[in-house]
Image 1 (tube, rainbow, N blue to C red):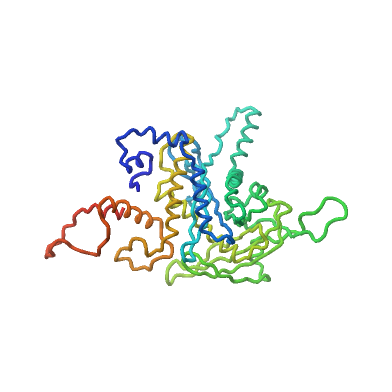
Image 2 (image 1 turned 30 degrees about the vertical axis):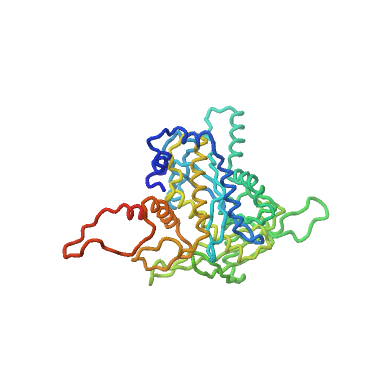
Length: 432
């Protein structure tokens, strides 16, 4: 509902409390007077209630950056800018966050929506001084290992896995979490579908064990994912998936019974190679191709169609990050307390998740009608901007005494002179 910057002061002004005592509102976050984990636990339960009991639960996990300017804000450090050009590495001062999002199907639609179910501020330890003693260096290394992104992700899963007891969980990630540290600590009952680098050194299973000596875990070296893609002797398969409101055809190659040293000698993997997708930037232009994708699945029995379909749905967590930082202003609050750096954005993410949960029960036709000049068909999934507009229309319309929306009308008498446009508060608020 806030139209300005989403700071604590802006939220107080939106509630009409800018001229009241604000100390209690700041203590709400700095002294942890509400538990964000309990609030997110209720959102997880609501997401599970919308999934059939036999359907697997797909969780997307990823990290993101909240840009900051203040050098004394806890958790702020120089980090690589992911939006920088590929030919130049740019650095920005930012906080690092970790988020889990559950993939929930929409009402009577093949489309899905990712709803945040867990949020955590994951800072890195400050840089160690050059004149540090060996004991300080050892302690700093232990602190760095405990604050590693993969370690924190596994710890968060241990805290919330009781909510998914008895359900099959498929974790969707990018190449950030297909690492040795994360795969070695991955529980056996958790299936991971993630990106794999194209030059990964894979191995076949051993043909036979030696009579004496240590038990063999790896067999003959297998081709790299890029070599498998270029191998003409391996035929391509065609599968059909649904993404971005349309059905698509993908060409894939599947290789089973593989092992990878970072994943451990007992874990059998399934490799799926997706051919580059052809597209045209505009009508009549030459055909271009996107980069190929290499997916790794820790469950060899999972069908390739489901692996590709689940991974395409992982992109919704990137949409979550974009909406949270641009539309909801997550990270704009200028707080300097370590507890507030976790609780303020966690409350904003929880409110965003509640908004998405409410939208899963509505049809696109139940929202505010689009403008008359918009001729495009109604999408099967309503955007977050449209959800916010509908929420503001409900709240502000009740306050302004508006109960319905009429068509184009003109209260003034038409004449030959240009019409003078008058400022209308309801129209301005609904458009904002």
